[in-house]
Amino acid sequence: MSEFWSMGGYARYVWPCFGFTAVVLAWNLWAARRVLNAARVRAARALAMAASEAR
Amino acid sequence: MWTWFYKLASPPYVFGVAAAFMPWLFGAAALAMGYGLIAGLGFAPPDYQQGDAFRIIYVHVPAAIMSVTVYTIMAAASAVALIWRIKVGHAVAAASAPIGASLTLLALVTGSLWGKPMWGTYWAWDPRLTSELILLFLYVGVMSLRSAFEDPARGDRAAGLLAVVGVVNVPIVHFSVVWWNSLHQGSTIVTLEGPKMPGNMLWPLLSMWLGFMLFYGAVLCIRVQGEVLNRERQSTWVREAIKS
Image (cartoon, helix red, strand yellow):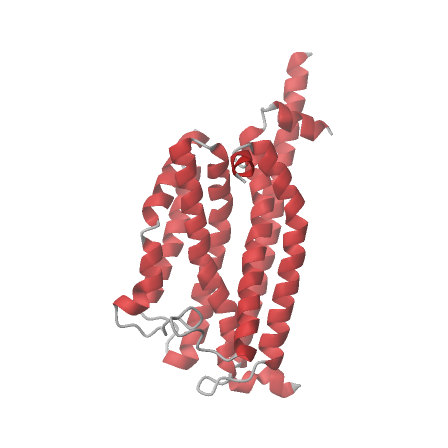
């Protein structure tokens, strides 16, 4: 198992690559969700404003 | 077929399709990446020259291919929006830019970490590396230009124009290793003689590439929904969707 983690002596290059990949993929998910949620909030606010103006 | 193509110009249709496809794309991406990671890290043999350092290929190459693929999609969507005034095109382009920029950064960072043990340096002003860095600057430029205007429609047009003009860098990135002397190796997968890798190294790579493509599709589906909502929030269909 330790042979696997040592990656033939290249562990300090290989694992940061896979770690950074995980960070980039996770950021993409988080940021996309944030954009969608913000858009939903903005659309709901626009709807509420239109309803209050109609009253 | 053409009816479906025309429907893609309709914001409510695109919003619904993106919401429906998103979970399937995520599931398929997880499966493809899961197989690619297990087979690439656990079962592919070490390279006869690079040893286990070659395993960086399983994240570097998919990220690098997707960096130019996403740019091409962004430029095509911008061209469609500019020529036929289809607003959904701008939404797809705006949604693609941050995903493409992050994948370009990933390709640069993983390439740099691979370069140190193989070339003896993290960075060289090599044609492939330099053109990939220019690609990152183009993404940043497109995103900055879109948000620089108070009028979103003007921002969309300016960013779209830059995306279309910047597509000239895509063939430069691809052919840089052929046109100039480069530290970077040439194509490994797509060659006239066929792939230069044995199957037990190649299949995990193809699976990771597929996984990155599906992941881009899934994240694009989320972002496109947000972009469409932002652009259409005064429309009746959005109001009805929010009410329900």
